[in-house]
Image (cartoon, rainbow, N blue to C red; front, side, top):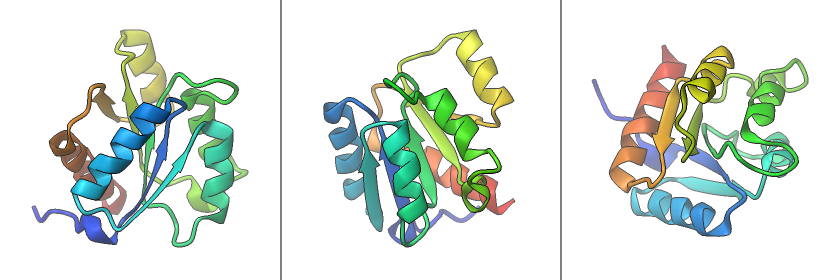
Length: 136
């Protein structure tokens, strides 16, 4: 199976921790991502998604954030409020790794997960999987 051309992708990084957000952005730059946007939380990410040009291809999302957490963000993304964006693949990037969280994410339609700490190699693998999932 052919690899996705990451240089043509627009990826949104959503994490309230600036260190993690900047680290993910740096890794995305290292792997040659075409366009990178970032947001410090779920509410900011929803606003950024609606304005994003070109459309965001993949979202890297933390779960534990104040105000609008990752779960609520996914619910809003998949709601009728954002129909053109509801099929945007989400990769959860989190240190949370319990069965309850995984079950809740599956119910929300998210099957791609990256445990912190993340490496550029793991990012490439998950981004490829996310884009291929969307195509299929």
